[in-house]
Structures are given as structure tokens and as C-alpha cells.
Length: 384
Image 1 (cartoon, rainbow, N blue to C red):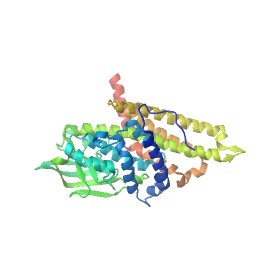
Image 2 (cartoon, rainbow, N blue to C red; image 1 turned 180 degrees about the vertical axis):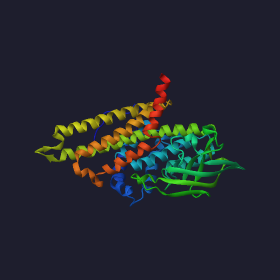
Image 3 (cartoon, helix red, strand yellow; image 1 turned 135 degrees about the vertical axis):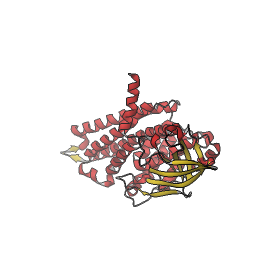
Image 4 (cartoon, rainbow, N blue to C red; image 1 turned 60 degrees about the horizontal axis):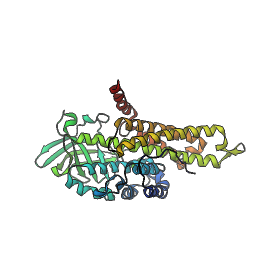
């Protein structure tokens, strides 16, 4: 049984692309998600296939993409995350790197990297966070020292999604220590470059499919031709990328919540207690009704925020609202829908544990709920 939400995107949606996402989710994610999450199988080949099918959605046709737009991208994330959110996060991070590369003023770098990123020949990773600099991105200390022909880079990056599989690393570094946002530059590195040391995957509570690692730069050289965004523009590009990521997280959380509703509705309709289906008991109907309301509210807010991206006027505050509500409501929805299955919800085969952990991890990605409150609070203060 599939939950049918009422809220719909404001912009046009490519129905064929959504159908492909549903087919991929059923064919690949549903049977393999648990193996990826427990580390008994690698999602890398599936990730590269998904990239070739879906990453071009967000990229204009004149740059080699499909040009389908924001609404289609979010609906793809929903349908994939409905089955496996951790895997979808890996795809979304790669897609965000690809979007950033499409916006780079470095035409030669763009021309070299974009075809590989769109086709899945290359997997991308976004390197901003550091062990001592997460919420305050202006405090990054990875140093890009100016040398003849480019930069020598030293420092450490943390929480690198796709670090395990990435071929291209988009790293934000500080060229002028103490200068804050003004000195940040974005440099491109390749796996195997001298001085680029990828560490083993982090042992997280879930979402092993994200292949999250730390990474150390030990005097790695980036030539001037590898500058994706120069100082003065790079930090703004990073913040735009974070906003794009927050919108994606909201959509993925909505998808994970819908997937939980799918399982709850199917089980409650097929299992009888006290002489009637579980779903016919008023108590269960009310639990599922509250979950449905949460999903509808979160999707409506996410699509409202998406409309601003579609018109080229992204609203950071609205996006923060969507990300905060999406992560919180998805966690609550998954927790509550588990009650429809009783003890059976505790079995890994039913996916609740994997998805619940993934949503909790997503709450920490691209700014926690507390950071979203800071963004929202500043906007409220400006109104005062």
C-alpha cells in the first residue's frame, strides 16, 4: 500500500523522471538498503547508476544536464528516500557538488568536470566542515598557501559524505588566516592527488551508505586551474550550496516519512486484532492521521521554499523553516507509525531502524535545528 500525499510542488515536474526514481527505488534500494547500512555490501555501483539517471535533473541543458528543475529534483529525492534515505543523502551531496561546479566561473574546470559528474564517471564530495569548525563555517583553518602556479593546502576536513567513493573533492580553504569569509576559496582535488589522504569510513549509528570519512590535506597542491571559486566569492557559493542542501534534506525527510506511512498502512490493513483490521481501530486511525498531517505540513513548506529557488530568489529563512520542520516531523512520524506494527517494527527487515537513524543523522547535516533557529531568529530580529 502506498501513501498518497495531497501537497504538490508549485513548479512543473517531469513525470517520467519520477517514475524512473520509483522503479530504481523498488529495484535497487529496497532489496539492498539493509546490507549497505550494516556494511555487508557497498552501494558504490548503485550510486554511480543513480547519478547517471538523476543528477542531470538539476543541471541546465546547455551544460549537459536534463534541465528538469527544482520540483522534479525534490520529488526524486522523496521517492528514493522513501526506500533508503542514507543512500539518497549520498546522491544529494554529489548532486550539490555538481550544481556548484555548474555555477563556477572557471569555464575550463567546468567543462572538464561536469560531464564526469553528470554521467557518474566521477563521484563528488563537498568539503567545508572541519573538526573545529562546523556551524561557524567562517572559522575554517584548512590553509591554502599561495605558491607559484597555485596553492599548497594543509589541514583536515571532517564529515565528508561520499569520502569513501569520491573521485572529485570540492574543498573550501582559507587563503588569509584571520580574514573570515573574505579569504575563503574553493579548490578542486582528485582522489589520488599527492597530499590528499582519505581516512577510513566513520562508524556511525546509521547511513553507512553515505560513505562518510574524514580527510587530511598534507601539502596538497592545487593549480590555479583548479580554483572553482576565488576568494571573495567562494564563501557566498558555499552558503548557497548549504541552502540547496537544506532544501534537499527537507524533501528526503518527507520521503522517509512517507515510506514509514507506506509500511504502517499496509500492515495495519492486513493484520486483524479483536475481530477487525488494525486500521479500523480508532486509536490507530488517529495515530496515522496525526502522522499524515505532519507529512502534509512539511511537504507544503518544503514546496513553498522550493518555489523561491525556481524563481531564482531563494529565501534562506524559509528554507531553514523547511529543513527544521522536515527533520523533526519525519523523526516523530517514523516513531509513531512504528506503533502500527507493534514489536515487528523493531525488526531491521522492516526498515524503521535504518530510516529513523538516517533522519536523526540528517538533522545534524547542513546545520542542526539550533542553527536553523539562529537563521530564523535573525530574520525575526530584523522585523523588530
